[in-house]
Image (cartoon, rainbow, N blue to C red; front, side):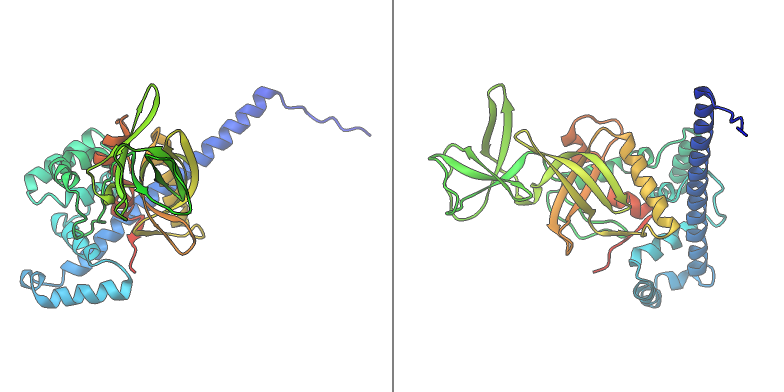
Length: 347
């Protein structure tokens, strides 16, 4: 006996597909919202544990510093983590019931003046400001001061030290095993790529020489640069894939119409593994950030034990000039720490 099997129309299938997608999105948003609330609650609770039993005199004593130092060692957290949560509890003795995330409050607790802090908080809630917008609003003067520095300073409490480099700056090298024509030198583009280029009046003294490339209608020009070596290895890139909260695959513009795809590890932080729910949440957060921007700026450092280059990531939702993003963009590594998605890596 033949059974009558009902055939689904294309419209019926697309309705089912749409409903399933909506449920997946809803579930993901619910997990992220729940995680955000739990992070805020947990941080406030820890602040209460650190602050409530003690008097004001203890806060400035060496005993408290010793206590925090021991906690940092036993819990594998930076000391700034405990000071920040203590400050959060002091500023907010009743846990805030708002839509703001821990990243928002991490920025707000840097504002010691209560009236100013309340003003920023109210504005963030009323305007639904992103943590990036609030950061730029609160720290514009501080960030400009930090950006102008060309020296790697000692880290501030809870802040990852970083150097904001400059794009299209390279090193010139001399290698006996790689012959160059007269007037040429090898430009180290990074990731092991070398390119022979004409550099007027270039003479080697045995040390790498910083240079800068310029593009015109005839091609590329390379000239000496006055910037220090620390500014090098900074690139514009697009996102190929987000592997987890601190590992990403980028398609990197090396300059000279050359690109390379690289698997990179975010420098200085350690995010939750994908084997747990927190790992999925932080990966989704990074993917969401990457989906909002047309490009990123990355500054690379040495390789880790797995051969991945360590990298600082900078981005902006509105800025189109990659050099401005390098100088003034949001620092993703730091944002993940502020948000509670990652901890500062302890060597």
